[in-house]
Image (cartoon, each protein chain N blue to C red):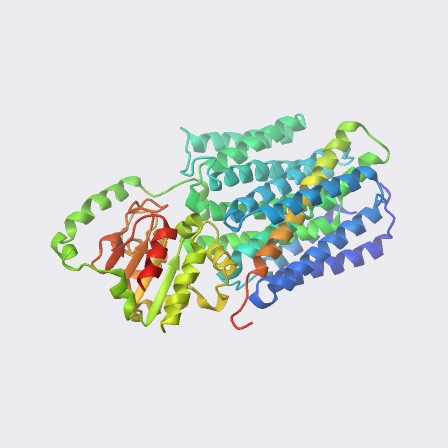
Length: 97
Length: 454
């Protein structure tokens, strides 16, 4: 993919990201931070991509180990991140319900 | 590397998933829809993972499946074991994992790099990833109290940080081996995180969170994954915005925090010496306040929780106290300072855990005018956020920080562990005020005492 397009996508995403979370009540700051933290584990996509490349063709045990560790770490980030966020949000409830 | 999905289809799928993530994030910023937003974000992430695996035709590769399974098992363990009070350090730790993962991705993509562009972007991702990793670990360590919470400033800290920055850039530019750049980046992460004080940690975590998004996004540029680029960029920017919101609430400058610059310590010392002299000791003795008398006829009570409540795990006692006060007809509200606890919203999470309805939790701006008309304020383990010195004591670290106006109430009951100044190290004149009752000790016990006396 053309590097220019990637950089443009990155910049556009940054601008959009900057405006999406305006006016968050401080009630939700912790869950939001935790949710965003989970999303940053999306780097798992990169981990999958590079590991796929080192698997086919197989290019050395060290590369595969690095790739596998990257996947494990990113999966923990994303899965535990969303998990604890869900657990936190479950506790927010209104009276009379 | 060949991909299975035709690129037009892949772009379309990416577009839909990124849009899903965006909608998820915006839903998460409203209390009613937050859960749905989180679920949507998670669903998009899972879909993105499956699409990527299919795209690289590794849906059945044993190494990858095993890695994912291992990650999921560790996650389940974390999700069900972690206590709510440990949330700040957990977020920091998970963030470190994400950073390290991005860094490892960058290491591999660097070794595979065919063009100058991809080796440069790999290097950048590698540097940011490793900084995020060590910085987050230090932050988690400080919050978990394995590391000293005070800012650690070594001699010539700024010089060291600048030298490290120069060294990292030089290494990357001269094409020295990756591990040298990695090592220097790790050192940089440590150097920058140790000098941040515990009170500023929430901001640091938020910043690191933003950084790990950026690291992911740039790693995405390096491996040419458009979804990763977009989501990384979104997280990076919204994380930065959240960081700014927090800085504003604490009245701190981001750069000041990163440089570990707490305003002159001498000013603090002077103030603590001056204050006892200024007040009239006789006035203090005169009014002996008993908690039962304050609470007996109280019609309106505002409870201010702080980190001390979290430490003492006193939130269920606080809830019991609120219930008991309501039973006898008092109106009870909770005042939440934006930076009470160790993360913004930390108190909300703890109180909601013990079933305090969230519409009773009020933010500083809305509740501050109400203090003047309330009969009693009960402070549970909060200090800096109610310190009136923030308005008066120029030159102290908290000067200018907006605080809860507890001093305006008719009576203040403070259930704190000791009389020592809070995190910011500024003595609290409210402790010595005439209408203040100090109940020192473990918040769980002191709050129980309050419950018993009603």
